[in-house]
Amino acid sequence: MRALIYEGGGKIRYVEDLEVREPEAGEVLVRIAASGICHSDISVVNGTIDWPVPAVLGHEGAGVIEKVGPGATDLAVGDHVALHTLANCGTCGPCESGKPTQCRRSYGNRAQPFSLNGQPVQNFAATSTFVEKTVVKANQAVKIDPSVPLDIACVVGCGVLTGVGSVINRAQVKPGDTAAVFGIGGIGLNVLQGLRLAGASRIVAIDLLPSREQKAREFGATDFIDASLGDTPARIRDIVSDGRPDQGSGVDWSFECVGSTRVLADAMASLGWGGNCVIVGTTAMGTTADIPLTPLAFVDRGVMGARYGASRPHRDIPSYIAQYRQGKLMLDELVTQRYDLADFERAFHDLEAGKLARGVFVL
Ligand SMILES: [Zn+2]
Ligand SMILES: [Zn+2]
Image (cartoon, rainbow, N blue to C red; front, side, top):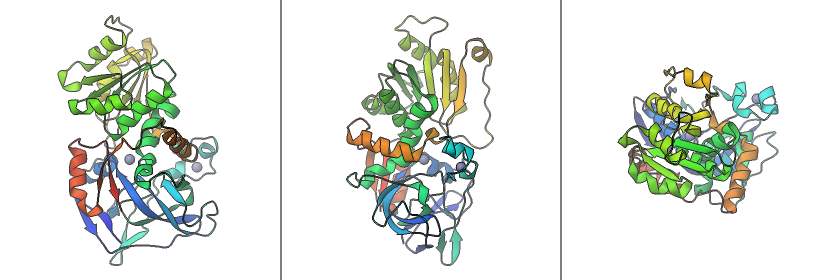
């Protein structure tokens, strides 16, 4: 079958003869219909995320159940599903208290369900979706309404869960709160629409590419700042204080969606008294940052990480799909370009050039 294999050293190869094993107990075989292209896939290729090779990348997929392993009783052949990457156990303390992103067994789930010419090939993020068929734990496949196109539904599996979830589940933004969102790629757009859904009163989008302003406003930004103009925190304070900033003014929430310590410094400096910064972007393992502590301790500012939007996929995915069908959550507008798997070089180039909200491989 067709797939993209990451071979290490920045090299990706398109193949047509990859094989996948049968689903075992508690697993399902999913025919992938479409897969979003996430920046985390590029982070593997550029070395930010260290991953064993060869591996089939992709982790934002939707498709149709093709085979059900023993015991996977909640799913049937033909079900339409969106995949999530947690592969959590479902029975530990965090899982049972609604925090599956903190399940200890949701980390390090590396497996080799694929083979190429008899050699084992790794999966990625417990999923692998740049491939015609993949094997996942049954609880990673969340049944969705079959009327929703799969090349739209796929983006829920990472971009929407991570972005909207960071606002709704992790930060728990309240109506009337103010926020600044740094980095308006696929994740940043979903943070913006999460803030719109949460009823934030002022939503400031910040990006180095002025071309992203229109899309940012479409997704909920009330204001846009071109970061190349400099002194972004002062511009933010000016906006949220209606031109009358004092020493306590700034936003209630800032979201760092780039994975940059420089951007983090700006995101921290933009907080008003009592404000909190949410780190959504991925940095290389071991990255540290200098954070001035006085503004935190004196006036209740804080900083928090957010894994995968603190998502509860079996609750959140159906909820997001329902909100999409009600016209509240924008998914069609996220998918800006579709590609054939063999055209991966153009797809990755377009993503890195900032041309896409979300690019999607249609299989
Ligand atoms: Zn992702
Ligand atoms: Zn667990």
